[in-house]
Image (cartoon, rainbow, N blue to C red; front, side):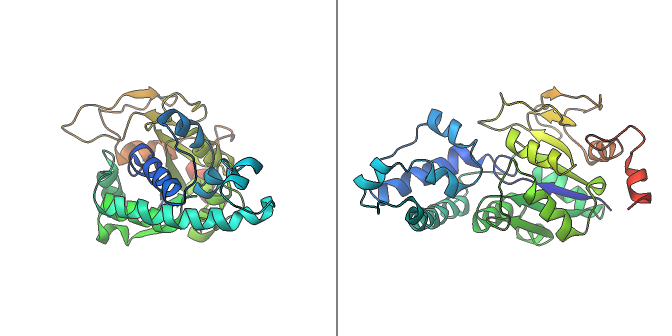
Length: 274
């Protein structure tokens, strides 16, 4: 059966604005770092893959001197790692407090996929503790146990590099033709496409205006029956989305050619030549 691979932040829950941003700012306050990211500031920072990398982006020689760091950029990584550990702790406490509900359709799609025998996974360059906390809150402890989680610094390059998705495919023992990714950002989409994966995008707080060329379907959310219908933002495969995204829609996407493959290279072709 196929694999369904979710990104975490912005996909399982809209975590960036309500979770990561306040956690970064609280960490800066606790460590007396004179930085406070506004909503507009963070809209730019989310384009940087990885929390430590976002934190490191503030460090200049002048700021390092002001907060008492050594005059050696190579030594700053220890401080950034310490900040990030504390930020992860703050963030996971926020998740446990329930301040970030799961996005519409996540529990339904995951439940339907599990019942159909699909392999479930999360692939994210966020800290593993943060990812597991969001996953368990979004789908519940029992279903979360059926997920493989690939997160944090387990690959050398973060999104938009394809490393995390290539790693997930290797660990799951899957060919790209047997998997579909759900992402929310251009960086995530580029990573998935570079790994040869079909990708569905559910836009989130900071990503609605990004370029999602190459996605198989772009929607406002996965949606749920009985709720407001999702907005279909791009539908190059002309899928008949009935107000919410179904497992049948994911199967229809998997039946189409892989990114960059000729029309004859369908899922069945991939399985025969694996």
